[in-house]
Image (cartoon, rainbow, N blue to C red; front, side, top):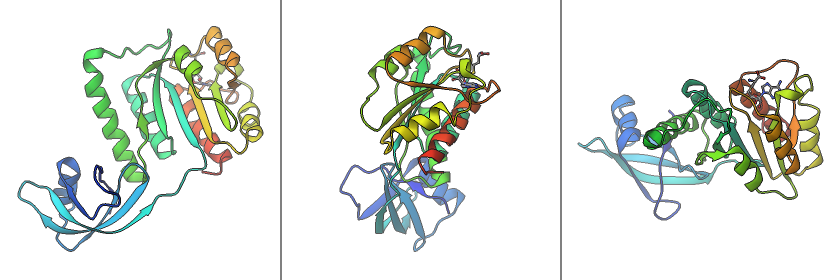
Length: 252
Ligand code: SAH
C-alpha cells in the first residue's frame, strides 16, 4: 500500500488522524480501506507514521489513531534544482523525476531565452498542479519529505542571491562545455567541497544559457560544467546532473 500524505498543524507526533479530500478518496474509494487496517503516512517534513483506521465516514473522510512514528532517512546534503522553465510536459517530467531523485527544492528560473511565459492569472492553477505532481511522486517513491516548490526567479537574481559558504557548491550546466565530462568540473567541485552540505544545480531552459549568464555565474563562484559530448534536452540534462550529484554524495 502506498504512503499517504498527512499534513500536520498540531502536536508532533499526532495521536489521531483524519484525512479528507483526494488522499481520503484514494484510501476509501480506490483501496476500499476498512476499520482495523494499517495505513502509513508521511508528513512532508521528514516524519513517518503508522496508523490504524477506525472509521470511514459518510463524507469520504477517514479517521483513526497513530500507533507509531519515526523519522525518514536524513539526506547527506540539501540538493536544490534551479531549472530554466520548460514547456509543460517537459517541466512536469522534471518535477516528477527530480522529486524521485531527492531534491529539497525546485525553483523555476527565467532568462531572456526562456520560451515559456508564466502568466500571472494562471500561476495559482499551475502551482496547484505542480504541487499535485510532486506529492504523487513523493508518495510513490516513499519520500518522507516533500520538495519545496519555490516561486519563479530571474536567473541573474537567483545566482546572486543563493547562499554560499563552506560545503556549499553551486554548479551550472553549460552546453558550451559540451565535450567535457561531468566527472571533471562537477565531480571535482563536489569532492573539493566535501563534506558538502548544499548543492545548487542550475540547468538552462530550452534556449540554453547566454555567455553573459555564464560569466555572471562564474563571477559568483559557481562551477560551470559539461555533461559529455552530446547536447542534451534540458530535462535530460537536469536528470543526468541530479543523478551524478546524488551519486557523488552517496545517495544513489
Ligand atoms: N539550445 C541550446 C541547448 C540548450 S540545452 C543549443 O542548442 O545550444 C538546455 C540546457 O541543458 C542547457 O542550458 C544546459 O544547462 C543543459 N545541457 C544540455 N546539454 C549539455 C551538455 N552537453 N553539457 C552541459 N549542459 C548541457
